[in-house]
Length: 477
Image: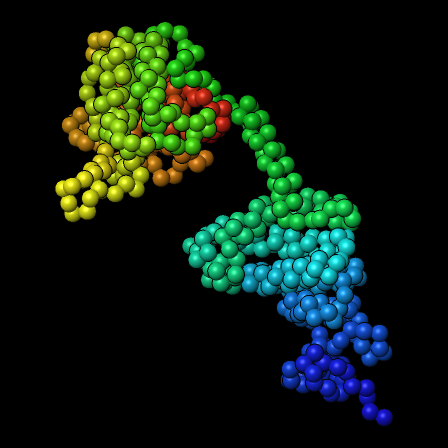
């Protein structure tokens, strides 16, 4: 009697191989997955097929979803468990290859969607979701530190250790997905597994990656911020550095204690500062208010150096440098000179040059910023101390345009930094060692950091608690 003939998805019929190994050795298109699961003595059960995949062929995980799609299989907790086991084993065999891990995730995602489409219980589909999130954690680990641009190549960041693909686009991974996977991968794996294990069998909870990030990521973020606050509180700033939350228009200092105020105030360019930006229509009054208070806390003959652009275009053309000089004079400062800083860039944004090749409506974009210097009364030293400016620097800085590139690597992503080299020049040019320097718009703490390194006493203020804490971290380092 001939051996029973199995039915194949492909429609082919033929003798059943004596073993799995024999089937693979036949070299035809047949595959053990093509056996219909069922109740007959010659049929493979869903569990047997999934088990075979887990042990022999993890790359065909998505084919299980095809069986579900065609109505050949039906959702069950047993099948979900088998798929999870298959995917888990497949991850071990993927051996750090992002392309294979991406395939496993896609297979789980397809099965998960079909489970839901065919009315699976949450407990059943949650098992698949849990394994998919675990797979995304693995993928995120592989993508950590790589370019998040779809065309970004891992060779741009060889320390990431990622191999087996040329770009995110090759993996079929979007930039947003890459970012999400990396956030998942930043979570502690034990915490992730414990949390998922606590909800996966809840019949009233629909598990998702978004839920994990909403709960664990936010919790982790809160814990990190708390830890940072503790670290800031416990960090030891140099004895001559005071960094506090305060409004620049009323800093907590007595009269006549500052030798130099050097700062770069907000320009009313609609920048998203913590605490907000100044309205353009209110900018001149704002400048007068804080420069009046700076005048109050400055010693006789002390200095004020204000970094502003020559002019700005947001939200309309404004002569910001001229307005700055006028505001300073109105509150009592005496004008001394202006340093031109060529940063090779512009604060005006990507503004066009106006009418093309025409005199109709030209618009000039200057890459220069200005450092307007004033004194409180007579031009002379307000503090007797040793200078640390070199003779050649004194000659060059006193005669030339200062050509220094703008800051391209902002500390903790501050939106409007300026370079340490600029702060160093201004402080050495205008104060001796031991003088007191104030920055009432502390920001990322550049002036405070450089002044402290140069042996000056420092007072820094900002209305943003986040910026003050950031500056404290930076200076305490």
